[in-house]
Length: 215
Image (tube, rainbow, N blue to C red; front, side, top):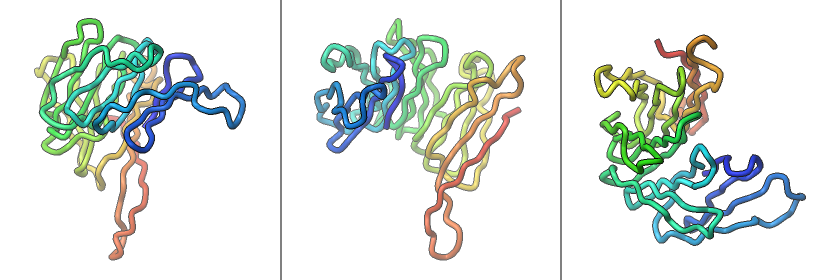
């Protein structure tokens, strides 16, 4: 996993043993990582910088979202607890100090990073969520997908008054990404998704990419 944030050229990369290295893409080729974080002692499934770049969020196998002060040696400054099992996915809001997470419990949560508390939490799907992504007008939509052939798109600020829009797909969802310029006056919100498909009797796994514009 990896993510951009902090300095414009800083990338966090997970590697064997659930370690995390931070790379400077502006450094000369062959340069070693400028920072390696301590290993946490549990699995790390995905990484994302918080919107201000100060902290690195880790989707953790212990059921938490860990916020790590990556510039200060990798200390965990907060553990966000709301999932009942492994957290697989984390994603920052494009403009606000918010973070989304998704887990093996089928739940998706939106966290206020100033209060370190959930703004919304719901059972988005009835199977593990492997990817989450904010999008739509002002980041008002949260998409979640995972191990089954469907994805959920939720107007998360509605407080549950608007049921999630569930889309049936041909394959499970590995990753989600909203077009950053879509929604509102800029045009329709557009969501891309990837996942495996198994054509033919050999069930050879091939990658598939889909695009949709939810209503």
